[in-house]
Amino acid sequence: MDEGRNMILLFPSLIHFHGNKEDMKNFDPSCHMFYQHRVVDIPDGKPKWTGMNDSSDLIEDSPPELKKRKREEDEKSKNEDGKDNKR
Image (cartoon, rainbow, N blue to C red; front, side):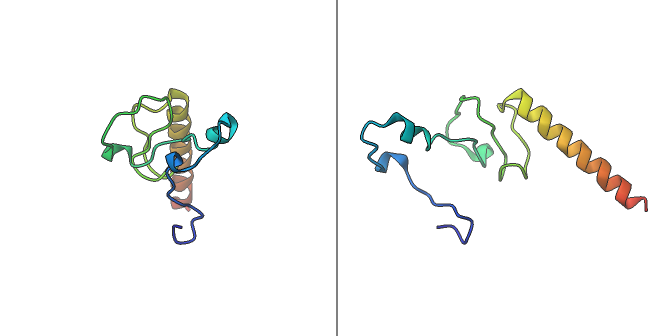
């Protein structure tokens, strides 16, 4: 386990699913973290982050709609920070 983060490193190839495809889908990745340090490219259309997901930058290979949403959130955050600093 990872210091209270409710995360465990478990390789799906070690689990015997007994042919149940639905259970196997539970182990599909939802994103790739620390992708800039990758060993191989994975062109799967999943979001790729430079660090931890949602708190780092998206890498170019990420889906366009996700990059747009992240950019909009960053701009909104900057605008809110700017308003707070003017007080």
